[in-house]
Image 1 (cartoon, protein in one colour):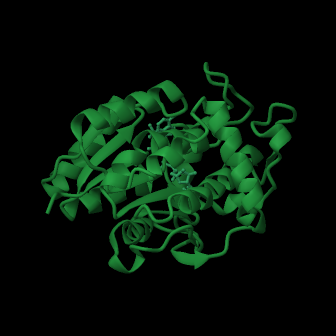
Image 2 (image 1 turned 135 degrees about the vertical axis):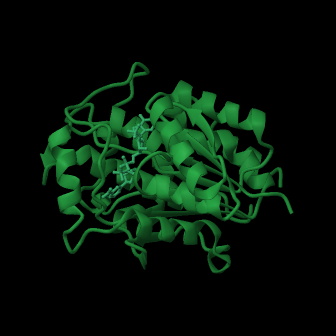
Image 3 (image 1 turned 180 degrees about the vertical axis):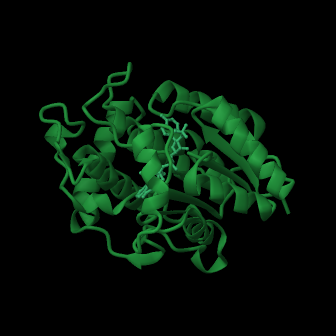
Length: 295
Ligand SMILES: NC(=O)c1ccc[n+]([C@@H]2O[C@H](COP(=O)([O-])OP(=O)(O)OC[C@H]3O[C@@H](n4cnc5c(N)ncnc54)[C@H](OP(=O)(O)O)[C@@H]3O)[C@@H](O)[C@H]2O)c1
């Protein structure tokens, strides 16, 4: 049997790193997508040291669509199968910033990168099926409804609440709607698509100021805090457990199967978001239909 291949973004830190390590320990070929060569190599070596498995490493700033596409083509040049895609890299940018390609940065990283990486690799996922897509999301999707007139906060950038930019909440609505839409569109292809919120997981982040990073060890003592190891076990279950092989379009929160907000089940809105996104990214409208009909 061919060795399973897993591509995971945001793989060098936190539960992305723990998941990469534990899946590597299970003998799955891990391809880590990281933003920084240095942080990526450090994580790669740490995994090798603990598991004797050397993950592959691809480098991309996933806020940039051209880099998402480049990393997908680098993956395709080396691998002819993809069994597990874990879209995990994310952050909350405030105040509003645009990438050189003209997309709001939180939207570009947390949502558009998920769409493009999935689309660029969907034929491999289908030909490797049964295969699984896992989208990291957040309970922050419950904060606020999205507005199609202000998708990227271009009219009115949502203010931060509870210390967290509301744009982050919106992009998590997008992530879950994407999961539902893909589950629907990929039905009968053997590719399942699920989303999860890890819960509250205090981690040190390269993008955070040192004084906030100093709080992470203290915050991890809070009763509501979850460890990166526990979250990795949740992800691994979604990625490989046989009893979830045919479960699709689901949302887990802190490891528990949960109903996401009502808005995310609005089929009309999910389809509208999908169509709007495809147009924004310049893909053929029927791209997915063409690919899914191949099987
Ligand atoms: N931790 C929580 O409590 C929590 C709760 C709900 C949801 N989440 C979600 O969990 C995921 C992991 O985030 P985290 O908060 O736990 O922090 P984290 O461990 O630092 O993970 C974020 C990962 O994304 C990478 N990344 C950030 N910007 C990137 C970019 N432009 N291009 C490529 N990679 C980039 C980071 O790389 P660098 O190390 O180079 O920055 C890091 O590996 C995110 O999607 C987040 O929305 C986290």
